[in-house]
Image 1 (cartoon, rainbow, N blue to C red):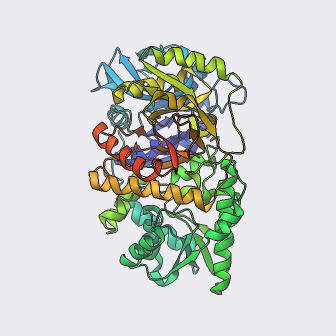
Image 2 (image 1 turned 180 degrees about the vertical axis):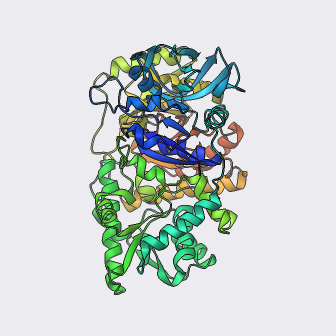
Image 3 (image 1 turned 90 degrees about the vertical axis):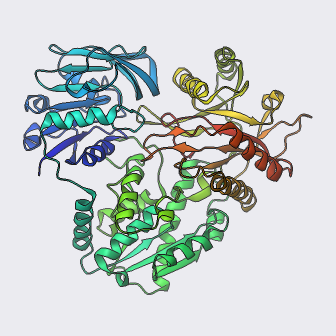
Length: 611
């Protein structure tokens, strides 16, 4: 079987590149970026991934120069673009303006891997350095207004590099570029999802041996498909499902999940109510990473407790999880990757058990779109295949906490500069005195959101404004559109509320979330939206008499396929106004919330979830 190698330099999208090549029918393998050239001689082509570090840094990951002498086609992406330049005698310099999100590239040549694309293409960027001088033998192929060498090529040696990310769905011409690269390699196309299922079933049998699997199951597509693969490989009598209600589920979700799982034939299912333990463990905790670690560790403690109650011999049982690849890469568990946030299924205890061979994760090399493909192949019903993703920690990571106001040191100057910037389109802006997690240049950021309000622009205007603001103002990584109160004066007064996770707040968030999710089905836009987090932030928006009244809700609908990149969803304004009206009647008029916002941030620079 022909293969293409993907060299991993720690980029958030390294495995996504391999995913895309497999989707084109060619088997691909990920190798560490420092792999020796001799180990790559059997591959038909080599792709260099992005990475979180600056290629100019002394500690930057370097490539074996011999890779460029293999005589096979090479494609460098982002960090790989810059690494190729600096390794072969070109130069890389800090960019005057970083590029995160959409950008327009002008191509002056369209042949080889660029054949069939338009003279001007919208692409997806995530970088802060630029190639400033091409190596000898290379031609400049494309540029943006902020990146003069966005694409370059040495056609004789079949070395092609791009600053943007062709592997993400938000680069429409990306699949054409990757398709053309595969053609350049001459690789045969004999890989399919059916081949993957056969391989993973064989791998499960080998890894489990004579052991059974105790699977942490949530009712989401990942853990459900994991159960079906384990069932196919080992038989259901050897797979036991544990559903833990941590107290941060959606309204009525425990009953709905239990019924759904039993409806698809999951018989060995144990349901454990851990809400009391979780609220006690998280009392007073504010910091997002700490919350995630507590949630993940308590999962294992409860799993051990239930195992003891059921008299399960730990030497005869493995822990099963529905971990998918984004959980792994965002936790920073791959070589050279930066930690964006700790997923509950990737805490240190899990890592140690994995090293001991006590954890089985049949989906940990797949993305959500591939998981859905496997689910469909295994016969999972449409409703469960297309269920919106819901984080393992549940609403705990959608309910932000605070122990005090957090403002940038340069707040007055920042708001003045931002105000001048948005005034050009007739809007106003404020910095929110809290922080949220983002990902910029493959690195984790923990920065402030900004609110824009006043004149209502069309979505494309808001998208452009959001991208420009997060690129230009380094203190912010997220932009929100103020929806309520409708009077501009309301947003002038933002009050922080010191609070932690407690049943009262979660109850309000559950109510808001249910209004949103029910309305998606009613409006028949649930399949248009990949995921719709409803987020509670401890911000009181001043009422007309200056008195704060309740916290605030952020609507965060996104479009994506694999969660590595995402666009905020452009909801029809008439539909959005109806949703605002329903939230207002149920929550604003009753004093439970005071503000409603719409997250207009793409990924990057903002992660899909806020924590």
